[in-house]
Image 1 (cartoon, rainbow, N blue to C red):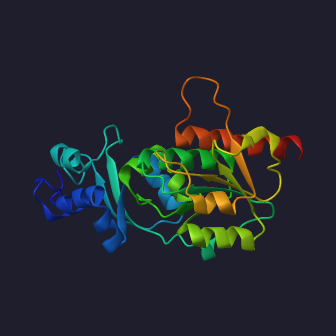
Image 2: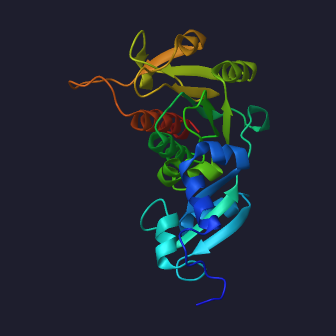
Image 3: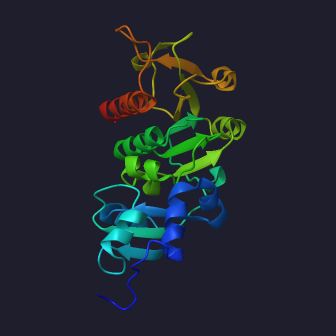
Length: 248
């Protein structure tokens, strides 16, 4: 074993990594987060994030210490601490006829991560997270996004700021809601479009409903009246992709 290998779970660096995994307040205060897994770390670095610490199972930490630090299983024996980035609306650079996804107060990190993963796959130009109830560097979000959180252009802002931005850039606002709406495939998504999704429990606030250019819905043909927000977002994103490919 190396002389500098960490052997104690009480080591200050080990405790620091664990705390970063668990506490969003510490991540915000220090501007640091933890990423696990070789694929995720490589993607993180490729997307311009600065890694400040790296821990490898059996190389600079013992297996016992690694298991203490790791948030999830099967992470290929590698953990990194990296610097957070700022995610501001003013830093977004959108192409002509962008497709963006807006998420208002989505509270479950796994759902937000899954949406970012789909946004990456669908080539979405930006994801805007309004009035967030979870931070972008939550370990469950990073895991669910499979690294999409690092590569999809993302902005965190208030709903008011987002609406002003969208209208100022002539981006049509489509709110996903069951009330006072029509089927999503009947609306043209080929022009600059924002697909807006609300919380898992209560949907969108009136602010977004009133700001919308159109209200769209996914037909519910069974006994249940809603889909998981990440599933709904995926359906709508790929409808936009379908329309744009058919008419390109």
